[in-house]
Length: 51
Image (cartoon, rainbow, N blue to C red; front, side, top):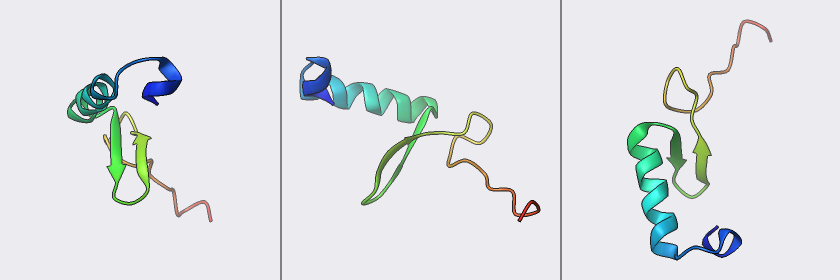
């Protein structure tokens, strides 16, 4: 990501950490960092009633 945006790795890491603190993203160990559900601050909820 840092290379793609032309910024230092430390800057990219700092931005990700700020987004984590704000609840805008969440991480899954071994998978990556993802945009959080605005209501829960975590993974999007799946409605099982529709299935």
